[in-house]
Image (cartoon, rainbow, N blue to C red; front, side, top):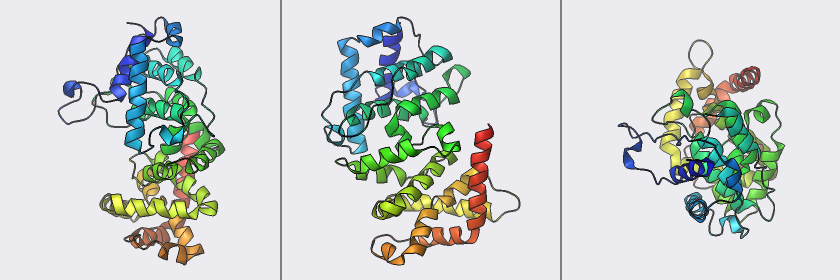
Length: 319
């Protein structure tokens, strides 16, 4: 076992090619494999089998995202950055070397190219940061420093999931906002972005980022914002209704609500702002239905939502 073996096992895990029994009886997935980081220099010259696994993972992830083939129209080859990130994830029992490996893979520049490489990195990082692993022993968790290191070099994940926590708390997300705008100009990029933003998340930081991004996009790309809320209602309407009912109960109770109900309700603030600015924009989306309950919740608790989101940022910044 060495760093390349560790990376290859994580690539296989990220692609779902693990035994069904690797999870638990509740159906929760197993965490990423853990392995040594010996002979890390060999990652610069990986074996053919490792490269094949990386290419297959990139292709499968692009298909699941709906990014097309080649991903987002980018025919450039995938680099070895995703392999370094996979090794870092698998080597997380050695925190220092793991972060050093992640930091050795600078984020690709995303303009005309770099998108295929971004998909490869997202394919490794996104499942790693997902919640609900079957086990959470100390040597199997992803600490905050490693998570942020991964997000700093996986720009697509930072856009579709959330930026690193230090950028969120410092209101320094210009890089991720610019990448989101670039993504809108790529083949199938708009569909991928709106689909990702439309889903409820159990992580308040993720919902907070989506609220921020939709607010930023509402000025120059209001049609994209409306399409996001349209997908939220068409594809996930029942789930959003359930989450919003819970948020309404929490916001109407005694004392300060938790971060999650605040973030759940605040997600709809950009739509409420668009509706106030130009109601005809919403009416132009004939299929956008069922959103009025969310806007009424925002109207009733607007001041509380603003204070709650500011408080969440302050607590995270002090943590």
